[in-house]
Image 1 (cartoon, rainbow, N blue to C red):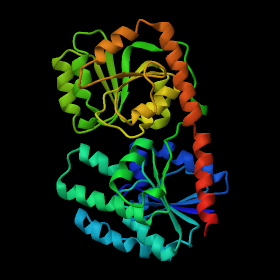
Image 2 (cartoon, helix red, strand yellow; image 1 turned 30 degrees about the vertical axis):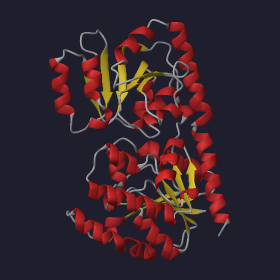
Image 3 (cartoon, helix red, strand yellow; image 1 turned 135 degrees about the vertical axis):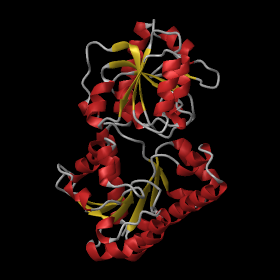
Image 4 (cartoon, helix red, strand yellow; image 1 turned 90 degrees about the vertical axis):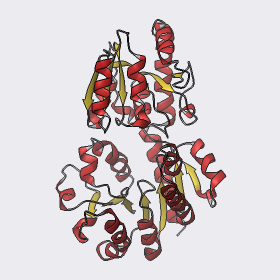
Amino acid sequence: MHIVLFFTYDISLKDWESSGLLDREVKLYDELSNRECKFTFITYGNDSDLSINNLPKNISIIPIYKYLKYSKYKSFRLLKSFIIPFKLRKVINRPDLIKTNQLNGCWIPIIYKIISRRKLIIRTGFDLYQFSKNQKKSAFKLVLIYLMTQLGLLFADFYTVSSSSDKKYLSKRFVFTNKIEIRPNWVDTNKIIQQSEKIKNRLLSVGRLEEQKNYEYLITALKGTDVGLDIVGDGSLRDKLEILANDNKVDVRFLGKMPNSKLLVLYDKYMYFVSSSLYEGNPKVVLEAMSSGCIVLINKNRNVEEIIQHKKNGLFFSVQDDTFLDTFTSWRKREGDLKKISIDAMKTIQNNNSLDIIVESENKDYLQLVNEE
C-alpha cells in the first residue's frame, strides 16, 4: 500500500531534524512499513532534505522546492502552492491513499486528491481554529482558518482529532463533522527504562518558550523556594525568562532544543514534570512524561482532563487561582501516594497511547479507506 504524506505547510524534513523531532515523527511510519505500507513524504524543503540519512527504506522523500522555485516572500509561496499538486502528478505514481501531517496546508493535498481520485485522511494533533482563537489572531486570520477547517472537513474522507474535546468543539461549529475520528497521540513505551533514583528537588518542563506555555507563572511561583526548574525548548521569550529567573533568584536551567531520543532518557531522571500551559491539545510531552513514571503537575483544562485523573495518575493545579506551589508542596511529602500515581500514569499510557495500539488503529484506517475504493 502506497501512502503519500503531505507535511505541514512550509515545514521541511530539515526542520524536523533541527527541532529534534525527526526520530519520533518517522517512528510511526517505520512501524507501519512492517504492515506492507510504503510512504512518500511531500516536504516543503529542497535538495537538502534528500541528504538526511538513516530514514527507513520504505520512506521516500519528495521536496517541493526541488521542483518549484522557492520564493522568500510568503504571499508568492502561497500562490505558487496551488501549482504543487500538478507538479506532483508528474513525479509520483498514483498512490493508494493521501494523508496530511496537520491541517495547515490542506488545500494542496485536497487538490491532489481531486486530480488523483484517491481517499484523503486529514490529521490534526490539535485544533488549529481553537488554538488561533486562544492566541488572539486577527479576525481576518480567524476567518481564513475557519474556512480552511471547513474545507478540510468537506473534502476529507477521515478527519482525525486527538481528543473528544476537539471533536465536540468542531461538531458545534462546523458541518460534515460525521467524518471526525479520535486518534490520540502515541508514545513508544517499549523504550522507557526506569531509573532507581529520580531527581526530586528540580522540576522538568518541556515546550517552546512562548506565551502559551506560561513559563513566567512557573518561575514566579518558585520564588523563595529551594526547588529548581529545568526547561527543554527554545523560543522568542528566552531572554525575557532568563532575566525574570535572575531577578527572582530562581534556579532555572534552559537546556535548549533536544532530540526526542535524548528527551526520553531525560524524563526518566526526574520525579516531577510540570506544565503551566494556558491551553493544550493532546500534549505529547505530557504523555511521554507519564510513560516515564513522572508525577505530572499540570494546569487544568478540558483537553488534559481526558488524560489526567486528579490524584490518580497526575495532579492538577490552577494558574488562575495560583495553586501550583500549594499543590506541589503538599504532595511532595506523600511518597506512598506519589508512587501509586507514578504507576497509574505508566499504565494509562500503556493502555491508551502506546505506539503498538496507534499503529494498529492507523493501519485499520488505511485498509478501510483503500478497500472502499
